[in-house]
Amino acid sequence: MLRRNIRLRREYLYRKSLEGKERLLYEKKRKIKEALAEGKPIPTELRNEEATLRQEIDLEDENTAIPRSHIDDEYAKATERDPKILLTTSRDPSAPLTQFVKELKFVFPNAERINRGGQVISEIIESCRAHDYTDVILVHEHRGVPDGLVICHLPFGPTAYFELLNVVTRHDIKDKKAIGTMPEAHPHLILNNFKSKLGDRTANILKHLFPMPKPDTKRIITFANQSDYISFRHHIYEKHGGPKSLELKEIGPRFEMRLYQIKLGTVDQTEAQNEWVLRPYMNTTKKRKFIGD
Image 1 (cartoon, one colour):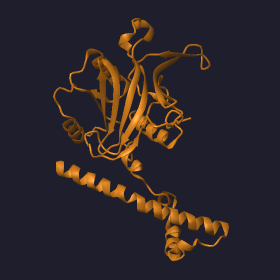
Image 2: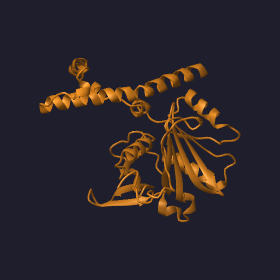
Image 3: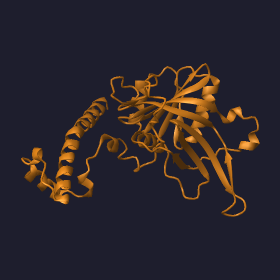
Image 4: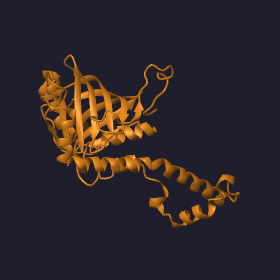
């Protein structure tokens, strides 16, 4: 099993290393296509390669014209089966963190929660790969307050690191009748204001934690981005007086997330390359919005 994982990882890294060459070739073909379409002369630097490139252009179709990236490769099989998620915490979790993770287990369909105990992260990742888990979610805390969420996609990444803020669990709400029970149906997703390239990447990581819902399910999960803070909300709706009369009820938990790092590898790989890192102390950081408008 170890040799197989090493081989698969090596093949994945090799495919990733070819991306730069494929992108360069794609740009050359694009310039030739534009020149032919507009009736302009072929750029001087491409005249020696024109004949070969035009032959390749003639053989391409919609599927092969645009080069695939490692991002396509990571989630290539995501639609073939439902996600299978493992939830765990940092070592020696407090009671509030344990309660929060228990509620997250119902938020994510097909999720299983395990007690961390003395297990090392690398052992957990290897075990999850062997049992065909698609994602591992780690929840961290500071003095009993949940403050970190790590989403690691298997088998090879990516890994997204989020800061957690303003966490309110169902357990914190005293009026249990007002929030009702939490359904386990597959939810509809609302992903709002993920408009940049990084926003698309973040939305892709989040949406693949949930399986395809049935059209008539009444459960809704919202990830709404505002100023790079992602608000998580969990609702159910009911139709009391026909299709135009809807009652929306929040059933919790609720929290805010802030993305601060994406790594091109699993959480146990310290040598993995950083795809994106938040730089909070740069002069322009407060003015810029990375995920959306």
